[in-house]
Length: 220
Image (cartoon, rainbow, N blue to C red; front, side):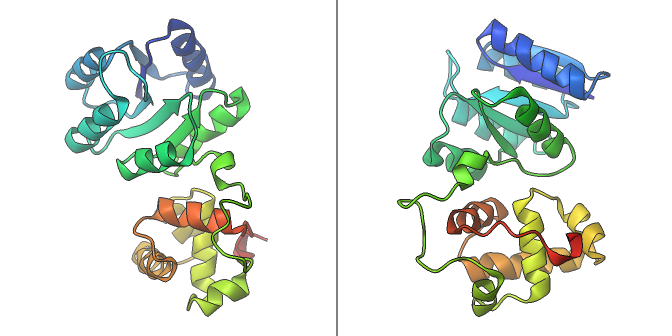
């Protein structure tokens, strides 16, 4: 497994290397301090599995780097690193194809879990983005399974949504709920339509803001 860390601060790269070694001791880790170095390394090693990408690089906007990498190397998982965790920044990162967003203030154990989640095919969204605040609440009505049913979702679709909120991949959801992957995809399509969103990440953020964090019945 090959991993690329892109950050212009040597101490941060060193800390991330230590985290990755703890998680994947056998990983081959490359380091880049600029977008130019990062692109050169990826061109030389297109089989890289994961990129940890600082959004604030000295030579180029990190979002444009993310867009270029997603367009040219769609199989590489990318996690954004940022000193900012405002919702607009997070949403933009996911819209451009990131599979995770880790604020640089994140504790080591949480960072480990986040990277491991993306390694396993999931999506990591920082918990503070999902925390409910009075200004962020999207509705005065609590988001409960009953409310979701009034949107037209079945119990099974609510189970699928709950696993989406845990960052689970379609394959893991299918295994957990004992259903075929195409069936999971169909349920997700219905869920997105009911929530008036266009991606699973938007669905997770929207339902998280509404305050519902119930696990599916099948996991209880």
